[in-house]
Amino acid sequence: MERDDLIVNDSYSVMANHDEAHGKDIRKKIWKVTAILSIITIIEVGLGIMVKQGTDLWPFVKWGFILMTLVKAGYIVAIFMHLGDERKSFRNVILIPYAIFIVYLIAICLQESTVLNGIWDTFRP
Image (cartoon, rainbow, N blue to C red; front, side):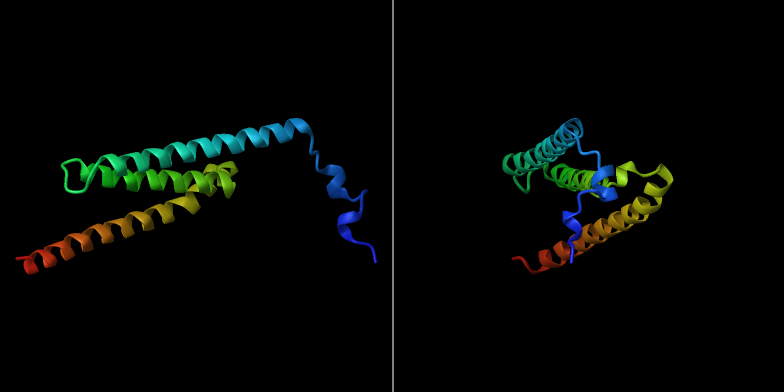
């Protein structure tokens, strides 16, 4: 029995067009994605180290964390799931319901944290 991965003249290996220029483009794209995600993560970590909870800047830092995390998630979906290569209408059909759902979850979390904080304040001496 002949294995499929050893067949040299099949249509995939002939039509693959894996040349060095294409490999360089792919590696360049990987480095770009790594750099962008690393920069956003470094900014998040730096803000978390420099700004302490309870300061006047903390609400802005919290929202900054939420926005940067959503940007990273969207970028990962666009690049690694190849959604960035699709037509705009198809992207919108996929992303808009998820974006609405994420905003809804964030609103629920913020509302519940405010309510719970008020409840805990009644028990503090």
